[in-house]
Length: 272
Image (tube, rainbow, N blue to C red):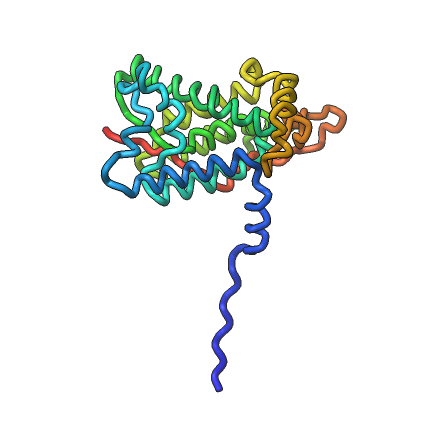
């Protein structure tokens, strides 16, 4: 009797993947679900989701300001959405764990979406006199990479490449350039704007946009969010405090982990 050949082992452990997904915090789950929902909406042909929600410089007005918030959720196809979701999830999950759910919502619905979008529109319209539209959550991927690079630079200023010492804060810029070279139809300018805003956040210049903890505690207590919402992270549950782990000067030889860059998504560039 011939026995069937053994199946090759999977390149990942399904139980660990399931355990990781089960532990994802609330806002991260919502972002991934909204990305999925918009991709499903793109399957119908009666209404163009991309045309409705893309960041199009010439289409921005008082009645279309929603585009500043919708463009990170919209993608131009399944693989575009999948790769961006894979890139964003671990970065956003870490951010929410360190800052709390309410703070994450306030920042990503507010300045961490509108600032890179506004900077992109300003450069496109005023300097380049162009109208290239963009969509894709990699604007948040590169923003978070920029913030992580600044934090890494504070504890580990350089990494060695042969005889050269390269500042660690430049790693997202290298990734931005490489991605633009290897992948067609991505927005180099959109990624660059996101990195610059990430740098500002990592340096602490955007702390003014962070809601006060006293207000957040009042909202959480008044609405009993921790008791009502599963996977919610309260102000007092944050892993490392609001602005992450501060670099220690007591042990200069200690090197922090590098910026997580296992996946890189792309902000899809549309039009000419």
